[in-house]
Length: 552
Image (cartoon, rainbow, N blue to C red):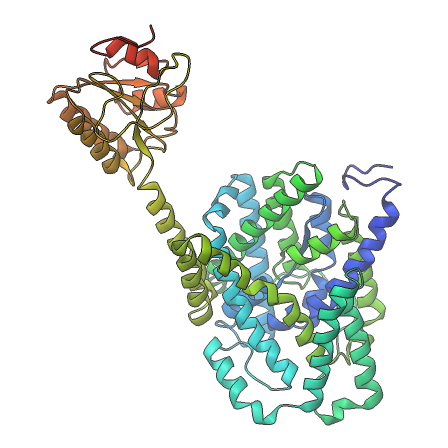
């Protein structure tokens, strides 16, 4: 048995995939309930996102393993963005969250159609570490309040949450602290003892039994409360055009973060397990999943790195577990919501808190500090802006920092005068000693980058310096093998450089250009009567003042 929709599925691995699906269900239900609370939505919003969106995604996506579901980052983005437009828990708030998911879905579809997945590359690792880390710490404060039995405004600013948590310490609930502490111990130790066991589900079941049998609700322990029964219903958010437009920036942020993380996870698991993935098809799958989520009462869906890793460890190599989990969630919604009513909030807080601890990125920040202080600063700034100003400004700053980082690196490309050696058949690869020519009267200069506005003047200055510092230079050969593009600013700097060289007088010729660069140079009117050589050695043989020891 092989399914065209579920690549990799066969009779031999069907049982393993089904068992993995049950494990996924056990992991996803408690987490999605917690993430829905982070987002300021009812528990059903998290559960609905496990049904139709998961089915649509599993049947469309090219990745065999990535699990699509709301995650902590998406929940925090929903809370911070929608919370500024409506009161958390209100009907209008829920409607906006649905609309936000639909807008995000539409953006994913557009990105797939126009092949815009490359935009996710602007969110480099330091930026993602900082952005997600800021969201994680904000979430952690809210979960800590749950664990201590302290009521704070979970939709408020980070500083207000911290202030509320500190002010509420005298009112903490001892039973809540005990439940949370026991839950954290079980989750952390259980992960070391038996990783295959769904410890989050174990914690929920045991904690709920304890609360019900000992009537801890009467002693101040907060519980989840009634959960609506029934399957997801198709709906469409009714909002004014102004409100739809107000949700676009946050939807863009959701789309970009999910795009960056989702495509990276899909590619890494595809390479690890030996199958091909299609980024544009994956973007299309995320788009349909988000539209399905918004149209059935869920909220923004992204890729779940932790659940994908759990499925990989469970031996899953197909999307069948997502379908099994969707079926199990539907059964829970139909017949088992009464079991969820008495789940203690401290246990949910502990589960979510432990789940997001890796998102703080402490190890990643340490690595960045060791490897590159500038990259560390980029991540730290993004972390602080996200934490103290907000998620949407955080993603805006992330893009600005990405452009600054890109311009910084692109403005200082490797530009070398190449040296010859005594091996006639070898390429010219090594830089020459400063102030020397490649051959008598000739300097061969290589730029290892596209020529554009950020490095055009740097390139021109480097060529002038090479000509003036070496003795009796009469010819400049520009090695264009590594030049993949030239923009208008680069072309203007190039024309100015040619005029300067002509006044010396020094001739200009080119070597090893790609065909697309030759066409680009013709389009920019940069090629006149200059000679183009197939190799650097051919250029030297033709131009050197003396040809002693030069190959013919």
